[in-house]
Amino acid sequence: MKFACLNNKGFTLLDAMLSFLVFSIISLGFPLVIKGFETIQKESVPPRYYEWNLFSQSLRTELRGGSNFLISSGAVSYVSRGETINYERYQDSIRRQVDERGHEVVLQGVDSFEISEVPQGIRIDVIFEEGEIVESEFYYYKEKAPQLP
Image 1 (tube, rainbow, N blue to C red):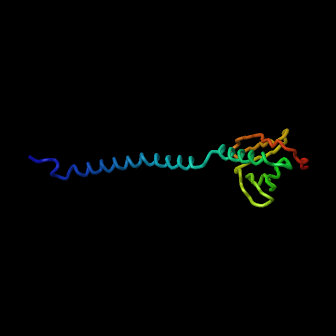
Image 2: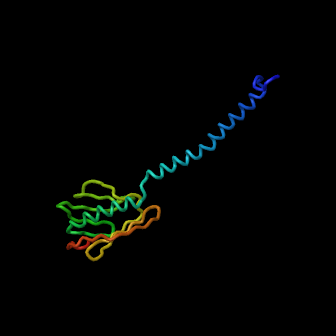
Image 3: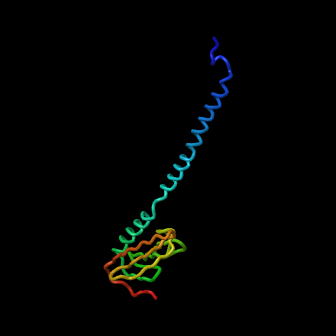
């Protein structure tokens, strides 16, 4: 009686089927791995509203103790704790300067930045490069200096 496992006639077919199975598993898993890397990369960048919330909270805190406000359409300047603080548009970002020194970027990817006056405060309208529109009003409850031309 001859057994099938003693000859080599079926071994090449079995070897080819096993190799094809391994190749198929790797081929089907590769797009899932790529998608996973894309998801990780996308999630590692914080959403725009995190940046806006951080900006608005820090500005709101600074404005409470501010005085001598100068407001123009693209900038706001005021004195807080003896230092002159200026927020203005710089290229595609909004920067903060203290005593006209430094370059602290507080918002990035800005397409439009408008500041207008409201009673006892300012209103900021921002349009980001992706088309997202955000707006907020900040109040300072102090006397302000005359508006810049």
